[in-house]
Amino acid sequence: MWDHPDSHTSALIGDNTVVRDANGARYQVSCSLPLRRVGSHGFVVESASGRVLEFTLSFSENASEPFPDPVSVRDRCAGHWQAFWKSGGVVDFSRSSNPLAKKIEQRMVLSHYLTAVQCVGDIPAQESGLTCNTWYGKHHTEMIWWHNAHFILWGRPSMARKNLSWFVRRLPDARALAGNRGLKGVRWPKMVGPEGRESPGGNPLIVWNQPHPIYLAELLWRQCPEKETLDAYSDLVLESAHCMASMLRFDPERQRYVLGPPLWIAQEIHEPAESQNPSFELAYWHWALTTAQRWRERLGMPREAHWDHILGHLAPMPESGGLYVALESHPDTWTNLASRQDHPQMLMPLGFLPDSPFVDRATMDRTLTAVLDQWDWETKIWGWDYPMVAMAATRLGRPEDALEVLLRDGPNNRYTACGHCPQGSDRAEGQTSGRREIAAYLPANGAYLAALALMVAGWDGSSAHPGFPDDGSWVIQSEGLHPLP
Image (cartoon, rainbow, N blue to C red; front, side, top):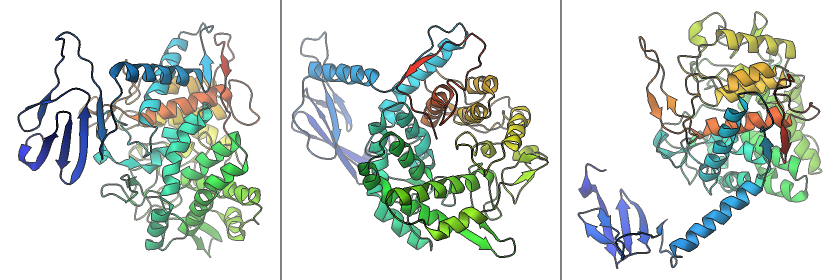
């Protein structure tokens, strides 16, 4: 657009407002000081005194209200952040002698700030927030857990409710999408704009985003087990579960429910037309349907018989050689290096998800060791993978490993001085590292905070600070954090 000035317009209305029209998108920018046009799309703001320039800008679809003065805006901003830092949970590492304590605390504080600025709005944030435009500027629904769960865990549930309300408002659109695909309930698209319409470029076969609203609603219920929570999210929970159940197919020969194909699993390197029974998605389906049954009981409704049949006959998590593998249809995770790239999602059933009879702890413990030792950490790994692996290590009682991988100086886990975690592309053959292509990646910051909450506050029935070694170097004080399930 910068190279085609005739393709858009910038009309100055009065002295203070510019009305913009770019490819049919219309909005206006209003300034508290007069504007002077310079060229087709340039405008200058000048100081009356020549020394100090203070003004406010407003971006909106419609006419703006009268401007507050800059001092008022600055004071309101200062008051907002004072209230933010005095609310919610806090962790103090200042008495710890471990040299990693300062790094953990610095990353924690900056991630709180960045996610509060960029992940709280009427529309769920894109993965690079408001910093830069990635993936066409669209919201990716599979990132909603990383973007929002930590707000709930750190005692700021209202910040998560704001994004989750978008899902509630979009229920009619999600019902229509499910119906178009022959499914029941509500089906959440992968990549969407503000109006909830599925966008080109987002793989429509991704499914691990479907249970996220159930998980987030459950976290909110745990903090506010009241009728108002049930009223707010019961349709979201139950209709999401209905869709998930309808995605499964009963195999009469195996007497098992199977998932896929076609399917694009969380580890995005496998052929969708052949993919069946991925380990994480199976575990997530089991947990989410179990949770949805509890919501029915809380609502005074009978259990859904079909969901109970699924829970009793769901295909087990696939494994090979005593280790969990990515998916049943391609069980070569540990015999083919090319299958050890992208997200090591076979760890998520015990870490991201709580302990359950669906997961064998001993097998998962061996799988964690294999991931740490054998995964291709250089070719492609994402910023949320490191905290996700740390969550698995924490739940398996391996705090040394949790700390090591959480703070590992590896590709896509290097944080800048301002707290952003840039992401690079796949490493090309002959290169030592991938090129940087995403300057900011909020799922990394959100996942870091979620993992830290687990490592400090634990989960139901856990010991205190399960993610930190009991070696005398960690003295941790905390308040206001909430355990995970």
